[in-house]
Length: 205
Image (cartoon, rainbow, N blue to C red):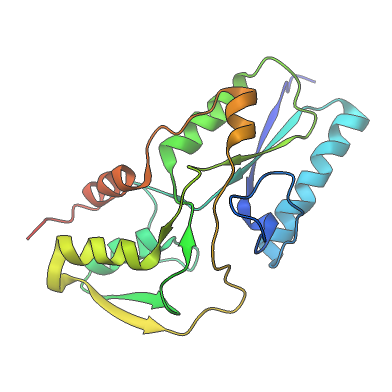
């Protein structure tokens, strides 16, 4: 056929709560939700596509993608967009559990860059999987503190119970994607957060 390669949007959720941080692609998969399970199943199918049909699929495991254009009023919103939405609309920012959960927050520019590198790579991937992230992590409390410092009383935090099945920490090992396809972090979390805040039109006061 005419399709040279498929770049599949997979997810860090395939790891479940990984025992090892930073988490490398060699870590066992342990999906803990229907969403994570179907991402994992398509990764398995990607290897089969190569073996059976020589269709080249590469699976990119995105970690907590956020940035401009992501709305904050859906159950699938990241904490960042949900909190920006709350500040903008004078609502409460929900914080689950003790707020010490941490995530490898991946600004959208990094994902776009990884997709372009993967799409243009000269060799076959044969269903191979790669982490797409920054290789570091930030806690919910750190982000909320930053927002409080910036927006003061506009930030109203409501504490909620810990969510069932919520993973405590995520942090990617990005050695493999860096070595093999020349990916590098284009924008770190705090710079990405500033750009996201700007997109929401949140005026400092």
